Length: 190
Image (tube, rainbow, N blue to C red; front, top):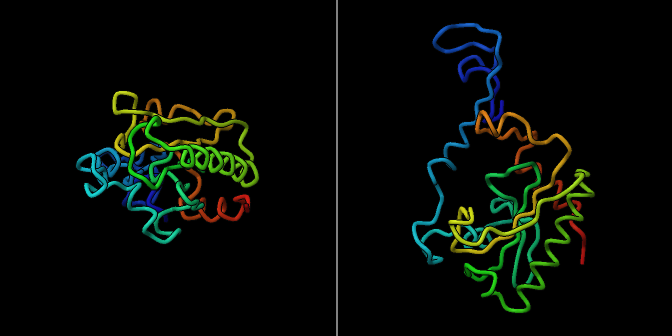
């Protein structure tokens, strides 16, 4: 069974309340989300050596770093804590925080990788729309504000339901390793 289970961790999904016994409800356990909630793997400061995951990912294998494509000045990778299956990000290799700090080559390559990511997502999973954008600064919602990154989130009609709103849980039907392999297979060749 995957790290996300229905039911209790003990029963593997039988719909039993651990304190009161069977109750007819299924439970969705997402223990991997606790790492995000607690801020694990979040940089301790604003310098690359402070543990920036966007500086670390390019030094890893594509599989281990969830890297989809590598350019000269920027690269694309899956979001470790996705909003939807296929949620990817495009980052410059250079550790910069603000869009105005990018040079012309980085700006162009981020745009090209964003287009390629949208094409790969369309070919792989046929989303009906996309959210594309950047959160610049912590006040704007950037989880890692010190290293600029652009989000590409595939969207389907009805993909937002009560789970994120009430349960603060995202339901993702595919493991990140499976999503990475599927998108890498459909990534446009330049």
